[in-house]
Length: 305
Length: 213
Image (cartoon, rainbow over all chains, first blue to last red; front, side):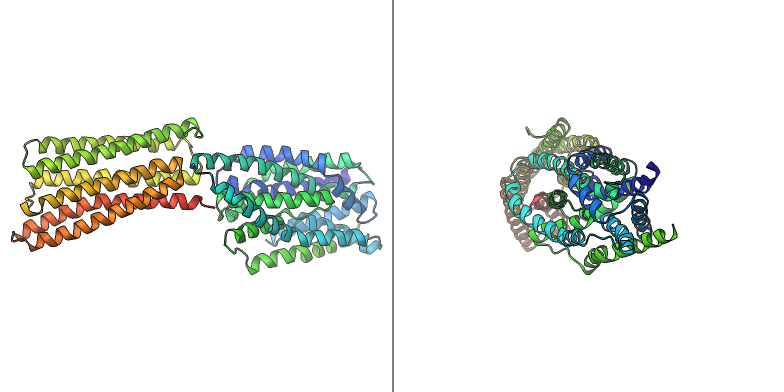
């Protein structure tokens, strides 16, 4: 029976390997904090987030479509395969959107989709980058004058390092609380209790962060550190806050899209427009392309199996 | 310095010693120029003291740079600080070069411009002192540092005016053209002390601007 959750563990590992970069990427890439300390803190807070704040999201994903253990496993496998294929093809991919697509693929075949839950999820996806942009802008506008009042560069540096750890831990907590539902949400009610799903999912994400997050962290981090230390930290905070709010609402969203919103918001607040067409395409493709690809893959797997 | 860690405080202390050593080089150089222009016998000894003071500054620069490889400060600031230390060190190098050249060449400064040369040397050293204040303030209060940067720039402009007036006056004198060219070279090198001080103050300004949010 437990073999059915292997796709979930794979997906959780991949999520941890990829998405820790959205939390600790900029400070690690700019060597503000060391990689190892960052991943250990990230892993610990991801598990805490999953266990203490993941319940609402797990319920939502568990109720998206009524399915048995085999169907859930195929849904998650469909999501995991689409994440792998799209990563290889260098297409923008979000685990949240892939898993929902995977569940929908089978749900549509069976006619068991809970459309009310789906609409709630889609609205949250669309408002994720917009919300993060808003928070990035507002938080920057409020905190930048306070930071400017620090006259000593020594104190400025101390504040930046403290901010990095506090915001990083909060970001990892939010990631765990929000995204754990992607990993094990499909099994809530048919194989796992909410507590079991939260713990297993949290540990799977943490394992990915601990073992394979360095490369992505450096790539994502270097893109974001075109901003100064302070602005990139505000972007991460905006992402963490947005993702945390959706964890409270109970909808898993893309941290990658949230960080894009956060960067844009902080950028606009400091007078730099960092948006481009490519970025917009990546976000739109995430909303539409990823669930479609994952849905088709899981539907094919369902028919074949 | 309360907010800095042990490593950072050690580096700042060494950097301050380096700034003092550069100042000592410039002041000894000023004394050398006074002695040379007055025709006093101790100018050779003062030239040697200038060279020694510059060597001391060099040693402190190397020590500070080695200490920085221990990983003190945030990485982006570390590079900026290394660049700043290097740019301050070349100011002492330039003073040493002038002292060596004048001592070796026995440059014949026409009597009519000796007072102006002294004035030029004095303003150049004052420009460095303003830079030194800017660097010290940079660690404590960035706004105060910005004021010292403006002071450095103003002094450099003042030195520039003196330099061009001096060259104009030199070439209006009835002296050998070879002497004129040799003296003009020395005037240019003395002016470099102020120019390089201003260049270093630009670096301080960039460090401050990079931190502005």
